[in-house]
Image 1 (tube, helix red, strand yellow):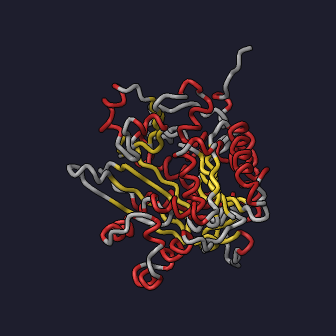
Image 2 (cartoon, rainbow, N blue to C red):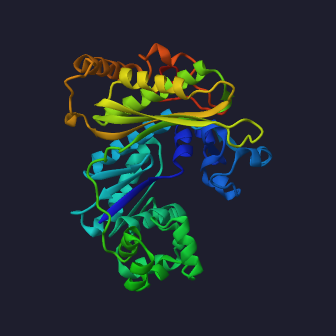
Image 3 (tube, rainbow, N blue to C red):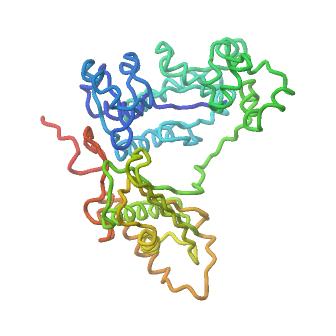
Length: 419
C-alpha cells in the first residue's frame, strides 16, 4: 500500500501558522514579483479566484472582498516543508519527498484495518508539530493514493485521511473523477481524451489495452495500470540527486547597469554551488543567460546565453562564480534593459567520481576546506552570513510588497511572546 501526504494550501497554511488572524479569511500568496496567484485559501477559492490569475486583473476584486495578499516567502516555506518531512519520517519509516508540499509513504507491513487510524494520527501530529494541515490518501498505487488525498480535501468528514482499498469503492470514486485531474495526464492528453468522449478516470480504465498501446506512451500506460490497481511507479527510498540546478529570477524593473547584473549573476551562481554541495555532487557544465522583457515590444530585445565547460568538475563557489562573471561580461550588451538572468549547472555527478587532471591549476583541497567552513557558518548563523564581496548588498531586485517575516530562518523575525 502507498500513501500520499499533501499539505493543504501549503503557502497559505505557512502564513497562517504564524498569523492566526488569517484563519477563516480569504488569503492568496503571489508568485515572484507579486505577479500571479500561486496559493489560495479555501475562502479565496470560494470567491472564484483562480490559480495563476494575474494580480493586476483582480486587484479591485481583492479590495472589495477584503482578501489578504502575501508575497512568496520561500525561506519560510522551505523551512516549514523540512519540518513537515522530518515529522513524517519520525512516524513512517519510508517516505519519498515528491515536492515542497508532498511526500509519498510506503505502508507495506501495516494491517489494512489500521491504516485509516494511522493516517488520522499522523495528520494530527503533523498539525500539532508544525501548524500545517495535511491530507493523507492511501491506496494500492501512487496514482490512486493521489486521488484519495484529493478526496480528503473535498470531504472534511474524512478527518484528513482517506483509505481506498475495496475495488467497489475505488470504482465509485473513479466514475466521478475528472480525467484531467488524474496524476500523469497532461493538457495535451486531456484534450485528446475529451475529443474521444472520455471524461472520467473510470472510462479511461475501461479502455482496451490495444487502444492504450496505440495512443499513449509508456508513462500513459503506467497511469492506466496504476488506476487499475497495478503498481508501476517505483517508490524511491532516497531523494534522487538533481541532474541540473537552475537559479534564476525576473526583476521588478529592467536592469541596464552591468554592475547590478553582476551582483545578481554572482548571487545565483553562489546559490547554485551551495545546492550542488548539499547533494554532494559536482558539475562539469554551466550556462549563464540574460534576457530583456519580451512583453515590451517597444523596447530593443536581446537574449544571450553562454555555456562554460569546466576542465575538472567542481562544486567550488569561487570557481563557479569566477566563470559566471566572466561569461556575463562577454554576453552583456550596453543599451539594453535586462528583465531576467540565471545560472544553470548541468552534467552533474557525485563528488566521489571526479576525474582529476595533471594540469589542474586549482588547489582543490584548499577550496574544499573553505567551502565546508562557509557552509557550516551559514548553516548555523543564517544564509549569506559569509558570502563573496562580489555579491554586493543590493541583490534583491524583485517586487515583494506583501512579504511576511521569515519567522523561522531570520533572527530579527522570530516571534516575541509577551507574558
